[in-house]
View: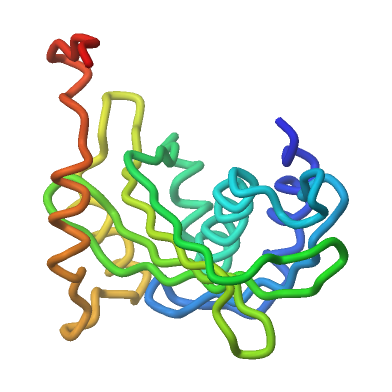
Length: 184
């Protein structure tokens, strides 16, 4: 909810930015705002994950997949995410959020996202997610087919790193259709 207005503005502004393909890297210029920082006056660790949503939305709008998703009533959901920090982004500091769609496996779509200042990575995160439609999860083959219909087929050299596939598998909780008892 805290990024609702910012997200709506981004969805409008991204339509006016240069077009991309799903396989290009989105570079979104941002600034650390007072609503992003904590008491130490740097971006709060949890806020990075929320800001990463903006980067993925920017890429999806600019490659025209957002319109396809809305028409088909597909909604993005995150399954797993991780982030590593190098340096703090401080109040009013300008940075770019770089977003790259890495590819898919049988269950997930993978994104790498970087917070960059003057060509230097301050933080890097990875997202494993999927799209849900009115009838449940959307098969990744269907998503890639829509991209191909738009003239954006998966590049032959695009592979999700093996370590990232293993991470998602190892970090996953049981399916929502299976029990997940709470025990320490």
